[in-house]
Amino acid sequence: MKRLIAICLTLALFSSCSTDEGSSYHYEILPVDSVDIPDEFEMGETYPITIHYSRPSTCYGFSEFYYSKHNNERTVAPVDIVLESNNCETPENEMAEATFDFLVTGNGSYIFKFWQGKDEDGESQYLTIEVPVVETSAL
Image (cartoon, rainbow, N blue to C red; front, side, top):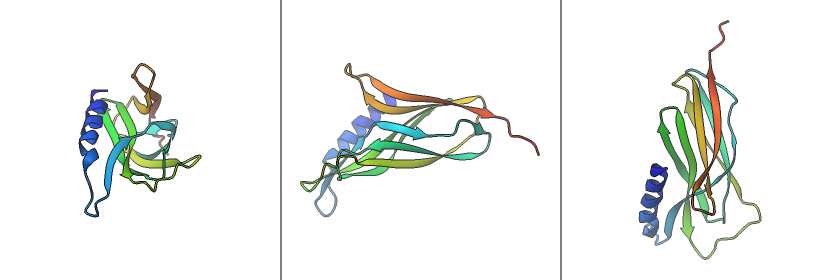
């Protein structure tokens, strides 16, 4: 939670940056709608994890993931770059997806917390998914 706040503040500091062409932009962490993630992992294997999220306008584009780890817990959210332009359009359904590869290096289970925004009290909400690490089957 503290890291999420820290990255929000860091991104806010860059909100007044501009590119060489004079276009202004800022970064924004967006809430996750859904996730494609395996039901289980095998030690030493790498798995793609795809998140689906909504973009508020056509001026949003994926930049990177907010990714924090603590023991076997991972907190993840997409970070979009937002062009500050008058030419942005607000589509009815601007869904986006982004994928990262996850290398399984520990046993037990991994707990993924995908940020889904804040509730009416300002508390962060998460889609929490636990994925067990199973032993590899010998041939």
